[in-house]
Image (cartoon, rainbow, N blue to C red; front, side):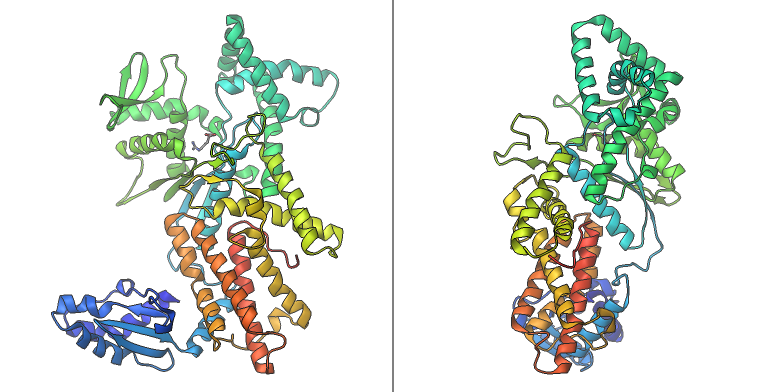
Length: 590
Ligand code: ARG
């Protein structure tokens, strides 16, 4: 809405601005809300800005602009306020027409007009042979929201799950897994059924202990690593098996979380194994490579240690092995050349900030990001930690990492109790479905609603509360609108009336609804999902204010009832779409 108003105002004022010798781009017209809603819907400081350039009294300019904007169809109020503001209030007809236009678009007018760009989105990045723990939650769900928002805006999103599936830890597991897999083979058992990732974790622990205690074990693991990297078919087959075994558990968690990643998006470190030597050669070719104590390094002057000595990015170790850095450098080249990325976004915790800063700088230095006159943008989206009540990273009572699968199961169980208390008469199958939506939604929302830069304290009671800035509160608002339609026997599709906007509570809700697209645009611009959460909370609150003051099914006249139903429809769709962008279900009944 704001954008359309900016265009309209720019249009009306082009001639006037030109007479002052000024060109007026639409996006330079700021339209913030006035300090007091009674003053209007938007406050424009344009006269003050123009006065400075044109050397004319601001109040005089304000008066002239106000005259040019007076139009009953658009504005109910155009008022000059000293020292040179113009307060604008929209005409009711303009509000309801704009709202109708949004509802008529299945995309709720979220798309940009621009040509789609190709965005490679790297998130989740789970490690093979390890269970997902709470540390993987944020990358997975924040990344997923970013993907949904970019797609809603019309971008082409290529998701990449950069699995940790190659290297020494895998060799350690393979050393122990080999004999176990042969045993299962001999008994004709399917390892995907007979083994769990917990078993693989145990193998890793056993191998670590053995390697510490016994140099022969260390040699054995090293031989496995070399043979695996050399393409030994038996080891590769075992590696495949443990990858599938791990990923089948990961996909169970993704399904539970409603995360969009699929097997097509898997492109782990192993994918780049044959591109590592070429990557190092390319670094040499651009003159970036230095040998230091047998290792191949890139030194960049902007990265120095505490004592001021340059920090190397080691791309090949002295033993010939490659690093996490090398995989990411290979991946950058593949994403730009192979996938055609215009933009690459990485979602990991803030501890990897230096890693990505270095890798990006190396890519820049070698000109890999140049694309004609343009540059491929490499962006690191970071986030803080999930903390327990004691303010340290969330752990189980035994001091272990909290398994994500256990956490989600507990969320659903706790939500079941909430749903049962709220609506004991709901059939049990539905209670279970709603409990899933509410429990998973609560966990995701309590994370997403935080500015991602911050740490936050994981708190069951707060996230499951039916009041406050929580998923259940938003879901409940949505279900309440659905129940209005159900009780009234009204089909949303059959509503033809224009939305009601004359009561102050109706107007407040309508104006909130008109801001949806610009909020999603802000989430896209800053890649910060909490902006959408804050908005949806305010929207649900505005709905609740409306519903308390304006009876819908028992409205005084049939016309008012229809108009309020139309407003309810717009609110329901916006809430549902907003929750969908957050990857949170919106049940119709709670
Ligand atoms: N597997 C990595 C980890 O657990 C995350 C991968 C992130 N993506 C990347 N391209 N490095 O830390």
